[in-house]
Image (cartoon, rainbow, N blue to C red; front, side, top):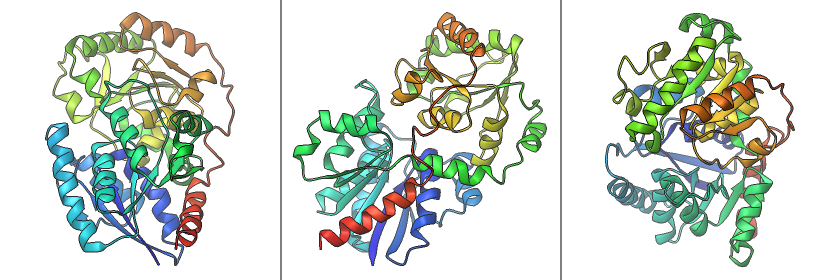
Length: 362
């Protein structure tokens, strides 16, 4: 029996866990214990994902949130350390690049427990991003590194990981596994009707990164562009709690602002929208999964394959650049490689690789 302590804390991690946990549950070799750090504590940002996606309920909830990066990571490390000592897992599994990810990886390695990092090797090459620091440090202390793309593998190779005692696997993207699986049972038209938008005639936008929401000038510039776009194409924006606290009615005039949505509703909107504008890493990929062009409201992206394929344009936060990107991408027809992130079986590849690695290391 392979015992895995899985650390979750943020929306994309719940989606990834839905895919991989489903595979774990079909194999007698695994026993998974889920820890929810509490990093995303809003009902629509956390609990709804467990309900919708049938993720196994967390065995533990640390309820740690609304703290500075250092305090949050420190408290998470202390809580996860206690659980590792109690549960004695063979591996701690972490996803992505959040504070929960780094806390789980550091706590495990300090207790000589092996670390599995799903979504390893991603780089934005922007060290001002907390996520970049988290992913680099997590990769460095991990034992099994599961990379979604060839670019991610190449990043690790350039950083000298072939000289380290690690196992690197290109597996594809578990978020694609989830998207393809859950989209089968989503009524996109009904979701659009319930939100008052016409299928095939709206832009879907999300904003949540601190570099955008915490900078009044950046946020105002992005919203200015969205207001202009809304005259040509309705803009639907599920509003993250951090963003909502910084918005005024004048800034959002013409933009349809709604409460955060569950994963299945977002899948419905992705299937039905014309274009995606976002600063979310996960949503950039999900736009690709459903063949939607994306404008990335950041100055860089980890998903360079999408830019190279011409389906994602990094436009930053300046109004004119966003509008220029919108006008350009509106004229494009979809042309992209359909296999950038694997064949929809990343979770199976990961589970099989863990079994092989575990047996080889006994």
